[in-house]
Amino acid sequence: AYPFVVVGVVLFVQIMPRLLKADMAHERSLISGVAEAAVATPTFSVEAGTQYNPFSVEIAAEEGATVYYTLDGTEPTTESTVYSEAIAFNEFGTSTTLKAIAAVDGELSNVASATYSLEVAAPAFSVKGGVYEKLTGETALQFTCETEGATIYYNNRGGDPKTEGSKSYGSLSVLSTAEVKAVAYVEVEGEKIYSAVASEKYYISPVKPFEK
Image (tube, rainbow, N blue to C red):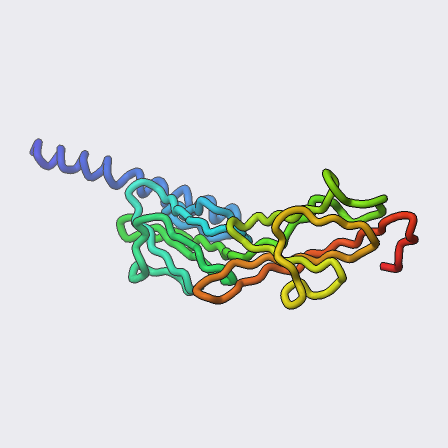
C-alpha cells in the first residue's frame, strides 16, 4: 500500500498548485467579467510604440512555459514560432505587430500584443524659432538626430530639404530672417529612408517678423 500512497502524494503535490491557480483565475474572471487564463500572459521588454534606432524585444513568461509568437499580426498558436532568443527589429520604415502566448501542460495564456514602428527621427534644432539679433558663433544653429548614423540635409530659404537641401556638416549661421527646414535619412541597400521634415522660423531684428 505504501508505494500507492507515495505516488498519490507526489501527484497531489504536482497537480494541486495548477488546480488552485486555475480556480483563482476563474474566481478573478467572475469578479472582473473578463476571462483570465490559468497561465500568465507573456510580457515584452520594450513597450509598444515608435523607436528611432534598431532594437530587440525579449519575451518573459512564467517558469516552465513555452512561448509561441507571430510577427504578422495573426493570433499565435502552438504551431507558431517558438521563442528562443530576443527578436530583432532593424528595418526602417516598417511597422510590426508582435503577438505571443505562453503554454504550460496544455494550458494557454491570453495573447500579449504590441505594435512597433521603426522610423528615422526628425532632426532637432539647437535653437527654437523666435526673434534674435543674430545666430552666429556660439549661438549658431546646429542640427542633431536621435537616429544613429543618420545624414541631415537642410534648407534655409524655406525650400524642401530633400530636393533643395545642403548637407549639414556643423553649425549654421542665421543672419537674416529665414525659415529653416531640415530632414534626416538613413540609406538601406541603396534606398534612402527619410524622416519627417522639421522646421523653425527665425526673425532677425531689427527686421519686423513676417506673418506666420
